[in-house]
Image (tube, rainbow, N blue to C red; front, side, top):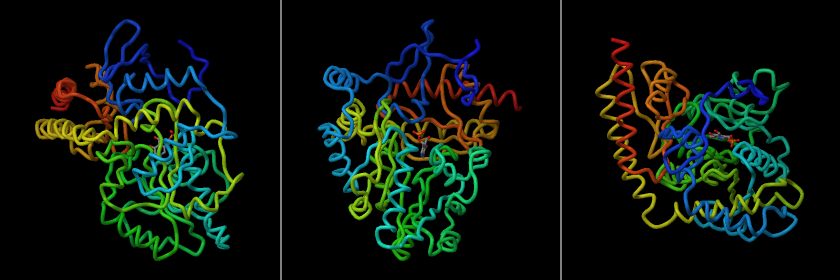
Length: 393
Ligand SMILES: Cc1ncc(COP(=O)(O)O)c(C=O)c1O
């Protein structure tokens, strides 16, 4: 069927009418086990009753009033994020890329406010992904994303992932800060080593520059911590969040320390929809569940069960799978066969997963997945690996 949509998303063939928990259903009633979860967005599965209730309740009160006025649930969500993290202040956006953009602006403004007007450049790591607006594509400098879009020197530098000497060498008197993902997502699920995070933190403090973590994908419980940086104990100055924060409703947030926030006086930044009451009502409902005592511990016990099953598959099918990466429910499977072939074989078995860099696939389950659902996923994975293994033999 021809489409009036722009073709930048290719031409997806599947179409779903509804979702419930771990599952998506077509209008013909066909059921798929969804481990894409809207690309790490629906952290509590589809149509979680507590989130549905929060959205329904808010939708009868007020949809939008703008930041001309105080919005109680937006203030509450900011306060809760501050209470649970390093941050002192929060700026709300509508997406991950806007949260990152806001952070870039704040890094520059911080130095500007101290009279350091030349400190404007930002350093990012190889194979990073920070979004699709102009500054984030310039930061990651992936030619697939930048070609035809950038002119001149947009003010970003890149260094190899995990190489502290290269990072030190790249810092100049023009550097404002560094951005990195504690767990790289799109680039192929890859943990940034804790000792490197510590070295980067120390380097930033030594050089008087800022450290920003992009937790758009790794945040909101997926790592087993509310934010993945909390596993390392290394706190940033700024943190971009989005995706899981709205459990499926669009929202982004840039969390910052007081010193970064201070220069962002009235008029320096803004968003019409950022902090919208519908979005923050759902965001609060997400936090109700994720920060409930024992929830993340329970989720990680179930994640360990899935990870053990995946480890067994890697041993059983060395011609198909090479390695399991990531942390908690942010799972990468590095493939020996082409990742596209594995995704196709899974789709034929009604299991949906997502591609990532380094010939990997990503499994991004909801944090409340059950062991029975995991068993179902492992059966589909086993079938797909068996079929591909026989093909390659
Ligand atoms: C680490 C990271 N940063 C930023 C983004 C951009 O988020 P959005 O697509 O909501 O703009 C993504 C999206 O995949 C991401 O994974």
